Amino acid sequence: MDSSPRPIGLSRKDFLKAVAAVSLGSVLAACGGAASGGSVGPSGSGAGSAQAGPQGWDDIVKAARAEGSVNVYGGQGEEKRLALIDPFQKAYPGIKISGTFAPGRDLTVRIASERQAGKNIADVLMGPGASAIFPLKPIGALAPLAPALMLPEVTDTSLWLNNHLGWLDASEPYTTLAFVANVQSQVAYNTKMVDPKEITSYKDLLNPKWKGKIVSTDVRKAGAGAVGTRFIYKNPALGPDYLQHLFADMQPTLSNDNRQMTDWIAQGRYPIGLFQNPPDVLRTIEEGLPVAMLPGELKEGGTVGPSAGTVSIVDKAPHPNAAKVFVNWLLSKDGQLAWQKYVKDNSARTDISKDGVPSLFLPRPNFTYTNAATEDYAKLSDTVIPELITKAVGSN
Image (tube, rainbow, N blue to C red):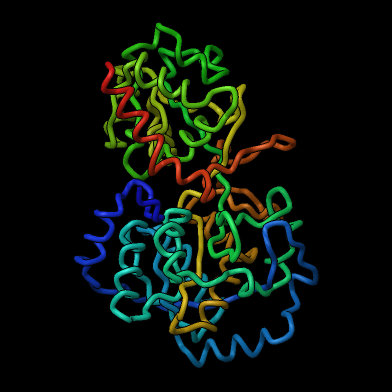
């Protein structure tokens, strides 16, 4: 059996086809700036002043300005452009961001294709997270990231959630860092039809009264719900048996149309929605429709996920100094405040204001969350979870 790593939700055969067929397309360009760095592992500790640059930092910034630009491959969405381009330019004038913004899977395939063709174009990859580790790390396309982190305010682990940096790699060298830690709410509901006090445990969703009245994201496809189903699969109080009962016995309707699912919940066609994309549900709530989300912390625990808030440096980056400056700025207080302002994600930094971040995304004090977005967890979304759901749905 071929055990080669591959992107979540994309078979090795399909991945290789995509690499062979990918088009390099056009690059969206805009101006940008830079910021900080240091070297630290998952439980490492940094020290120093957030204001003072470490030895050699000024030389790196000077070299980055000589390079003139940094090629950032990042997730789609105007809010990400707003969070990155202008704030970075103001921080580091003279360094231009050339941005390619697309779905994470497309970016992963593109980098693999470029590498296969002997072309080194991307400097920084943002968004795919662990799903980029599987195909890109084994072929040497991701550079070790820890040595590039230089600014004390970045490497000081006391300034990050749970006092450590959010590495997603299962083993060294560490290449991919999650800088967002959104609490994952798995349950949306119609406020006129569901009493939230009825659902304090995932097992409450197995109440026969909800049979045929649940709509769920089809998590066999890449996207929303992956972190939540991985958490359930490995939770000792739930596990594969729970997912089997949920998808077989409760007969949920499966969809990947986020807007349609939230409309169905609001209309009462399906009073409960599972594993949906929280920003889509939040927009429905803001429209004044009778929809709400349960807190992410249920009886069996809770999980956090990075959404598109991950970053890697591509190996053989054509602008290595500008890549370092960009990544350190991104992970600095200023970079994370810009991300929170426009993207509305919860930064894993604990030393910045959370104004504007949806309260559901914010971790509770003294509550332990599972990070189900790591490489070890992410493998489940490419193998056992889709197989389990297909079998469960087929048994209806």
